[in-house]
Length: 155
Image (cartoon, helix red, strand yellow):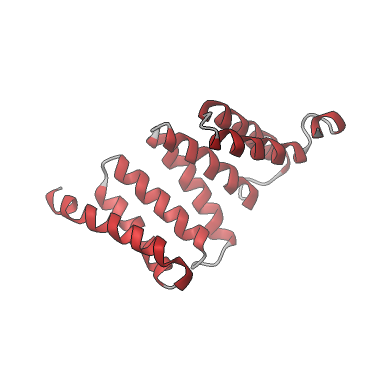
């Protein structure tokens, strides 16, 4: 609908593309979702600074798709980009910071880098531990950390 009334490179179209990408992701149409997220990102790059919080949303969404496609190396790059932006704009104990740290840690685990995974997972756990509403996330991360600890001693 927006494309009918707005120029094709209008910033509002980026939000629509991102929203449609989320729908495609839920439908498990990952290739189309990735394409939509990337199109949204390209539009945002025209209008927004590279460290704008909205860019972090796109980086995060692209990383999620790449993770689902098991493209962990590229996924990590996008999670790190999103995290760096979030660190600039959010308080250090924000759940989005913890989520970013968890995603980075998870990805390092998938890349068989348990030491780096543990580093990020422990930081995420520290944030979640201080947030009583996030006890289930804290417990999930603690289980992940415990699973990695024996691997760390063998590497």
